[in-house]
Image 1 (cartoon, rainbow, N blue to C red):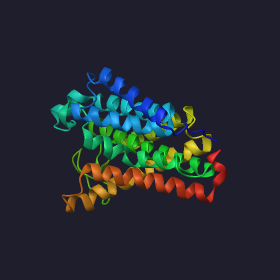
Image 2 (cartoon, rainbow, N blue to C red):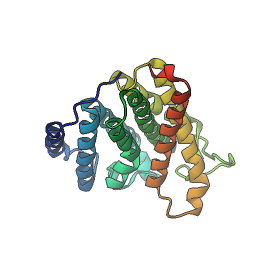
Image 3 (tube, rainbow, N blue to C red):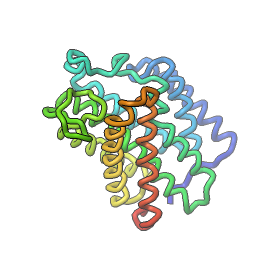
Image 4 (spheres, one colour):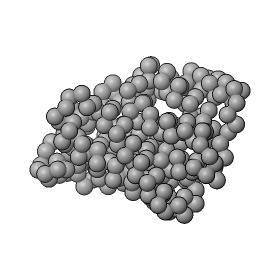
Length: 253
């Protein structure tokens, strides 16, 4: 059973002070915009306060791995007009589009009976596994995908099209999702190899579901932004994982 830190004012003040210091030191790194760093500090405080250093470090690993894969082949993606805006730096909308669901689950874990904590942490892990899988698939698929098709019709489309997939990108999505699951396992946020496999597999399923939404609803409704779709993807991953665990408790370890 994962033990959460004591939920007292001193712990939360320490979480705030630690994150303020770390953000002040890290904000020169080309990972986030200035506003993005501020919001990352809020996110980090909430995660450290609710889950302790393990939850915080898991999301730092997510940010680092996602930023790294974004930089792969960046020059070529720029030549093709497929690079992320702002040189790959993430803003507040990217921070919360990726992390809002996981943060809510982390905060809920501090309020539920001890027996339900592992269920919420599995959802937390799955939300970030899905998002890292999406990032890996998108960034590698845009650069190295040989045959890109629309997921709903398998019609050939240009790389970067909403709802487009490729064999290379799908394999990268699975890799990214499993990698994030292994990070969660190594940090003790999930406690068994079967659960890590479930989290990684669900991350891929949620990534493919996100492509379906991109190919259908997002192309019709302009208000359905990438950040909203990302939030929906992470929510689907979390709910699906928790639903499976609710029926098969032994996977939780």
